[in-house]
Image 1 (tube, one colour):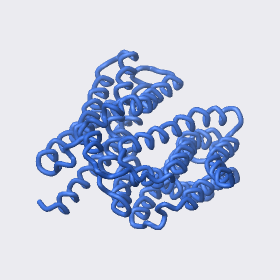
Image 2 (cartoon, rainbow, N blue to C red; image 1 turned 30 degrees about the horizontal axis):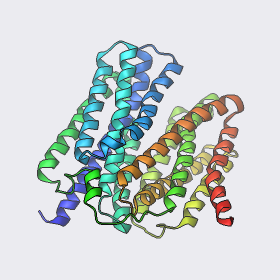
Image 3 (cartoon, rainbow, N blue to C red; image 1 turned 120 degrees about the vertical axis):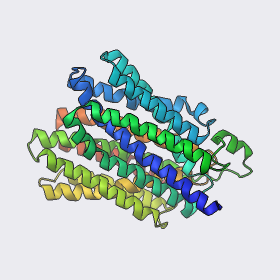
Length: 387
């Protein structure tokens, strides 16, 4: 097998893994809401706590386990993640004790630390410029497509039985494990068979990281905070005011996801945005402006435009973070860990504080607070330039 074809197959395996993994994780996350409510008879508040367990555990595990994960071969790290998640979901299905289920959720969250930072650094190995952009774009399309499609199947299965989607998830986790074991024997090369730690030790290159990673990371943190608002608070607002049916709300959220997928494709085919600080700042200012204007939205058409534009801007902010974080760096696993930690913090902040602000002050104030938060990095950046 020649090097070009070998690299092509490697990329396909990584992207298929990313698609199936995100599809399955989204399936588990949605199915758990119903499982914890109906099987364990938890209150809405405790259901929320159960969802925060694996999110918080993932955040902590990314930081704590980084010295271990960087010493693992990338495919072995992903296999460990798949097996841990399969075991965790199996435990949740098998137990009737809440404490055991919550412990399984800790394992489920920790498993993701073996997955996303490692797979992101793996696909970026040896790539710079447009090659790096193309690789990260394919990855972004894969996981975001899995995230967009998963609720369609999960919703149908949950209506039949909460056991079905979780059982299917176990099968899919094991299927990814089998795929990687086969690819390990017939596709992956010597570069795939060394850990990030050993790769850095063997490298003769110098780190040429771009300082633009900092403003890009700040952007992904704040934009993910705003994303959590659009995904969790807006459906509550629409329901409380009887603005739209659940179907129409779902169509708006699906629109955002689909537009994001399409924008990832566009960004992967272009390079004019690479290393452009002005575009990074402009994206963040545009998100803030969109949130401010969202206060004026009253009709489905208004929200259609809102979610359409947010899908575009979200894809830009995410791509800028992952590209500028990896570009020129020898320590790509650590950089991807930082990227994942920041977007997870954003998700937690948006869900917790967004919910509190909405409950006390209303949805308009949530949007205004989100806009002010997103404006912090551009303002700080401009102040530092003037100094």
